[in-house]
View 1 (tube, rainbow over the protein chains, first blue to last red):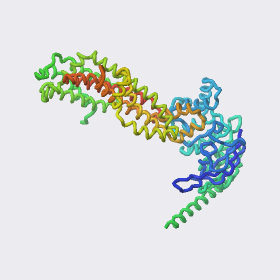
View 2 (cartoon, each protein chain N blue to C red):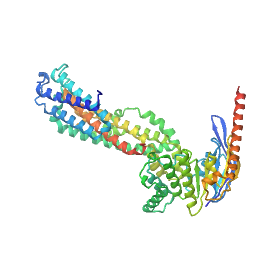
View 3 (cartoon, rainbow over the protein chains, first blue to last red):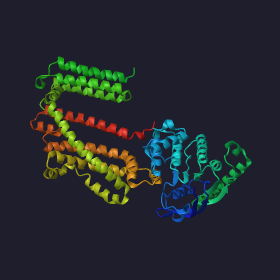
View 4 (cartoon, one colour):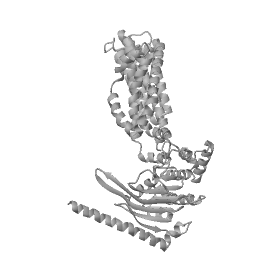
Length: 272
Length: 309
């Protein structure tokens, strides 16, 4: 149970004397148990924002509050799933989950840890792969392990950085459903911050979508996704409300893209 | 018809058998004469059995095994014909195979003792180097500031051949075993250290981030994350260290030992006993191949998680 409060976050990267504004005064309040997506093209700073909330990066200005406590570094209260680098390749699927439980629930016995790990592997149908190393699993299987590993840590907040970005479209749909199933199956809804560049993914999963635009990275618009849960993928994507929202989101992103191209062309002319 | 692995193995086998027949049936050149050919015949039989077993046990690597088998068969054949039977080169410094392998039959106890004493010194020095260099290297790699000071020092000191320290080692340490263990330690330390430091540097930062999420205590971070992640690079350092250790050991033994592989060659060299010098070289080769094989197996097992299939 947790709220996330992003207050006036700015992030500037300096590379060889040039200043790249990755994030400019980003403000966002996420309610307890809410599923919020950050939607935007690459380079809009959405991954940087996730890293800041995770405590892996320190913003130039501004603070992140989790339950009104400022974030000072990474901690087990915030579970993270990255695109394809969450698991340790030298540990089997089983060991990866055990390791995470061991370091987030200090007072469990070895046996309890192993029982829980078994249960989590069962949950995503990977019992048969418990002794497989991540390199021998498919991308989808790896992400299933990553996701249950995050659940096994029992954090207050889930941070997911394009977790399904490397998967093919069928696998992606399957993983989205798995995620929603696990998320809504818990005793309490965890607060989720989910990064994606896929409009459909954002619409299917989120309660709210924060649309981000690049250079400088900002939140351009936050829209509510009013569809009731549990959602049915088929009827949802056929509804007119869905298409209206989707075309709105696309036009916001598209308009920003056209502006960006125009900016770049001007820049080129300026050089010439 | 294609020249298959089976043909190659057959040809190699025939060459070896021909060598054996030749050895028994044709008298040696008078200058290469030896009172018993049985050791050489035994070696030929062992080679056939050994490569036969390898081909049977590892059919996947049959091509390479067959190639090596053929090369060894040809070398044995030419050695026996050109030196043993025809004595084309000075028989004093180029003994035939029957004379060389006869040495193993006579000297086997001394040789075995040499292998044991050499491997003892080697493994103690090498293991101490691993046990100290890996943790220090991991820690230096992890702490950027330590690295700034340590790396230039390592770069400056590491190219000094460890045998340079031999005079000090002999004066300061009580026994030859202690001083050569020390030299091997010095020689193996730097490559392992550099491998460990470099290993930490080359860890994907995303993996480090994954670990930071768990907020591990530093000791766990080093043991469970940095160490395995740096393992591929540590192994390349450890391999260089192992080769270095062999060179250091044999050189040290040649200078100041009373037994061991290097000593054996050096000792018989003084008496211009080239049968034994060459036998000693073959013995070192066999020991090195065996140790390297062991090393490869340990490496393959430790890095089994890297294999994608």
